[in-house]
Length: 271
Image (cartoon, rainbow, N blue to C red):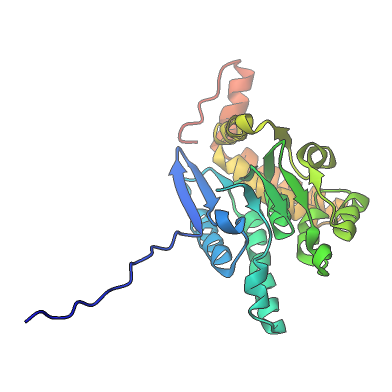
């Protein structure tokens, strides 16, 4: 007797929303929703937060590169997901989650370099602004475009206004207009705009510069930089003086200074 055959649905494996690859002390985090222009869904934010938290505890990682798959770097929040949850509490939690990710980038001991191969809008522009360094293909475009759909980019404004002048930031926020990568470089949103085929090499230039230095000096310096920005000048100088004194007691600094005096290359292995 032939038994009826049951058909099973094929198993579709879900691609991780964020990929991580570690190599030579550098962690590369890649946004991996290319069909959705790497829009920041809850899953993306959760994955980013998890990876940043893990990297913060990993002293073997010296630098982080934030990249993306597909044509866009990041098109901001996932508007379809947002409209599926029309509740103020949901939106407050979502924007709070996004803000924690941005602050985690600033608070991460390791420098974070944005590698921008394409469009970065709204919270995607915020993500670029939150990184310590940013390199973009000269074909990339940037905008805080929420105003075009009736939503002022309030949380992106926090990061963008700390990179651009007030009037340049307000122009982006009020108009939603796009700027190209060379303009973004001139205004201070990114460090360099390069041809797409040179993007990898330009990012590697910064990576090499960072990992060739003593990690203690890099980690202490990044923390000091962001803290002093929120202080008055006298308080900032007092804090920076104490950090510098502590840095002087580190073996990396003593080796570097001795090498300079002795006119030789510093040996920072193990420092």
